[in-house]
Image 1 (cartoon, helix red, strand yellow):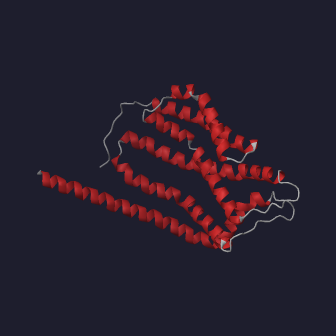
Image 2 (cartoon, helix red, strand yellow; image 1 turned 180 degrees about the vertical axis):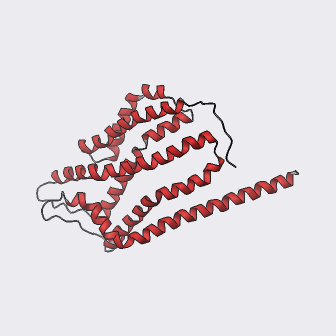
Image 3 (cartoon, rainbow, N blue to C red; image 1 turned 30 degrees about the horizontal axis):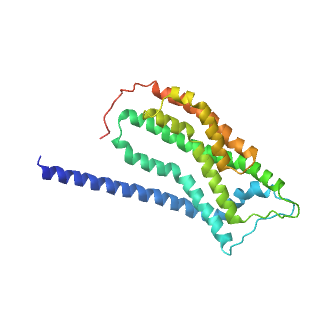
Length: 254
């Protein structure tokens, strides 16, 4: 085959990959939009559900306020979008997996698929942990330290931003086992080094918790302790990965 024919074949292959990537991105965006359209009529209910841990801990007669004219409309709509993205994430990740998996070796596919599923599950668990345990603890603390004569009336937009940041923080921090397995799989570290680095990991977990959570001991412990436990889970999972034959090879899927 001539150099010109090879160049033409490479260019055609590159274009076909771009077309497939565009197709899968459009499918992912369409999935989010479909779920969003279905959730828009429920936007106010979703916001009421999100604000429930706060409203339950407000003093008698307390209420949330909207300082911006458009906040009562845009805040629930913004929440509906993030919930739609949250619900459509498995389909989005499936599209990404379908695009990249043909170029992976067999042993890489065997490792990547469980990691992908685990990362989604751990992110969901982290968000649920933040909603059911952390938010009530934070609002209990915040309302209890309010000075006398100060009415606690959070703004709906600021509360939504605070809650979303908290969900993302806990969701990503719960990805510790996945991160450790990836680091071991690519040879950056080993289970033995992770064990030796346990004291530094514990200190790091408490530093991260102090940065990401409000300045109360309860919420900091609710993030730091699970991260330390997940670090141990990551070590166990990394040992399982290293027990596989490191020289196992395959060929990319055709």
